[in-house]
Amino acid sequence: MVVPNNKRFVMKKEFSLAMEKGEVWWGGAVLDGVNMPLHEKSEYTLNCVVNETYNQVNGLFTSNLGRYIYVGGEFVLRVKGGVMQFSELTGDADMQSGFEDLRGAFRAAYKKHCSRKRDVRQSLLLKPQYCTWMHCLKEPSQEKVLAYAQSIVDGGMPVGALIIDDCWQADYGDWEFSSSFTDPKKMIEQLHQLGFEVMLWICPFVNESASTFATLKEQNALVRDGNGNVAMREWWNGVSAVLDLTAPSAQAFFQKRLDDLTALGADGFKFDAGDAFYYKHDDLTYAPTTPNGQSLLYAEVAAKYEASELRACVGMGGEAVLQRLCDKRSSWHNREGMGALVPDMLQAGMSGYIYCCADMIGGGQGAEGNAIDYRAKEELFLRACQCAALMPCMQFSLDIWSEKVPERLRKAIKKYASLRVELGEYFKATIESCEKDGEPILRPLEYQFPNEGFALVNDQFMLGEKYLVAPIVEQGVEKKKVRLPKGKWKYVPSGEAFEGGAEAEVSASTYELPYFERI
View 1: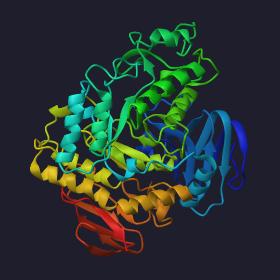
View 2 (view 1 turned 120 degrees about the horizontal axis):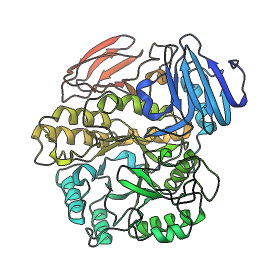
View 3 (view 1 turned 120 degrees about the vertical axis):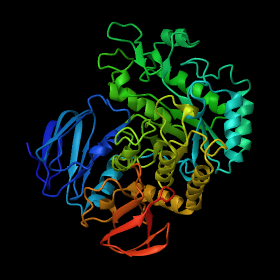
């Protein structure tokens, strides 16, 4: 069935929509940014019966011709031959048209289907963040964390949130500090004195060896499999039970542990895992739900804390929780590394997740840690830093400001971290404007400049209304061709003025971030 363009509908089960000539669509799965926008020649499938991606999904899709689709619940989307076919719907679908352009459609859809309970904690966006993962890997300690924090201060880097990543716990499911942290309360106080906000890595897994396992099992707070046994699920750190967040006992227990940690001084949490694929449709749970439903419940816990971050999420578009892209590799790869940063960040915003982080600068996948050869990867780290500098959130992990790093890289890293702080008032005003009007902070050029031929552009972005950013995400590139929208533009690195509506070739040496200011 083809849905008429000018008719709102509420429908279940399945429907299809024919694309019009020149029409493109954004939205759905954040990890599929490299496939966006969808157009008449696209062949694409997104199965949201269970979110199998490692990132966020939302049933929000918007078109450059002023149409939007919002699909609630589970669905499968197949695109072929210029037709978008939605099937296996478990919720309602809402489609509206008649808006002027992509911006009009997005604002209308966002305001109707992406609600938030509070404003975002601006400090998480206005200042760089630092995560201990690539520095400490699986052996963090109180001594290492404090030394890491001090190195940030001594290196002259702007101080922001500090995330103590995985392995700070005694065991998965204890949610208590291990013996490697001799006085966690004092450690957090010292970090606060240095100016950091402190966030702790959290997951919903519970090991059989955890001190809490027997209690949670007795309280029926753990997911059970179809046979009634505690479900043991394989994940990247072993095989563990998982909280059943439909159970009041699990909600209360988890909330109490997190609140105990905030009482200790923690400002918030990095909520990792929570992926829908760790649950199954035949799981036995306290209340009926789906794998996506369990993922949503985990995200709703995260939303209770102002300083919170999610990597996996189903729904929750618009909620003032910091989202991040899944771990990227320390490479130039076009899907798993640098090449995916801009497309995935554009997709995050257009899917309703406007507060998003492009993962750790230089990548956080794998176990390279401090074994990385900084000289060999100097260009990669610098380009990643430049790319993140003008995105909604900027996060470091490896101490690329330290003395072991080549001096010119160290100076450049500090320069682009400082740029974010220098533009703090603009970032602040943009965040507040986006919250008021329901718009992405980072947006496609087509969003800002409709009908100027930018419909398929996904390697550049606008930061709010003023800055056009064309970061280098390929190795060895030192010149950049940028077709500018109509109007007057200043190439910030050189101060050179350009008349828009034409292509500009600019210098983009390793130490230059290609970006323009609208004047």
